[in-house]
Amino acid sequence: MGKLIRKSHNVSLLMYHFVFVAKYRRLVINERVDRFLKDTCLEISKRYEIRFLEIGSEGDHVHFLIQSVPSYSPTSIATKVKSIIAREIFSKIPAVKKQLWGGEFWSDGYYASTVGEYVTETIVREYIKNQGDTGQYKQLHKEKLSDGQLTLF
Image 1 (cartoon, helix red, strand yellow):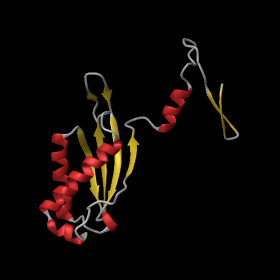
Image 2 (cartoon, helix red, strand yellow):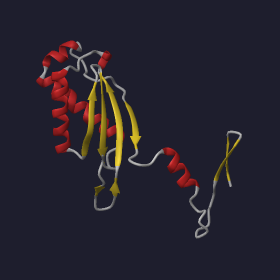
Image 3 (tube, helix red, strand yellow):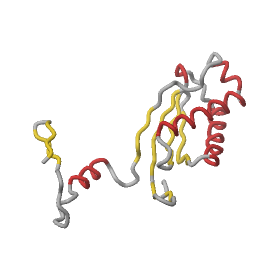
Image 4 (tube, one colour):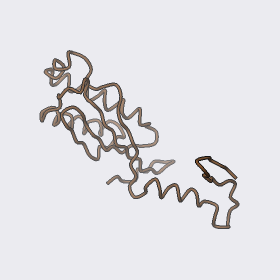
């Protein structure tokens, strides 16, 4: 489970699910590569504010549950993690580079989604919709969907 990260001007609990796919979907992630990949992630955690909560690999792709800080965008996290892992694997296990014809370790794209600890999208939508309904504050506008059309009033 993620823990609150406290900084001088913010407190956050940001978690992401990433999936990175090996180039050409080649089955290059064996036990040795997996073990080295996880060790590399521990080193990344020491240098950056990126915490790996879970790592699971399956031959041609890897799932990560990552917690980080607001100053790191999902794109910057993916870029850092992918580039460092690829560089380290290619330097320590050169046979992998040969399997990929001397090219890149990862495919260009990736999957990313946010993960909530206790709150689902439905709960957040209801919370936001009900803002201003307490009578203490004047509600400036409210969203209403009618026949698929968005109406603000």
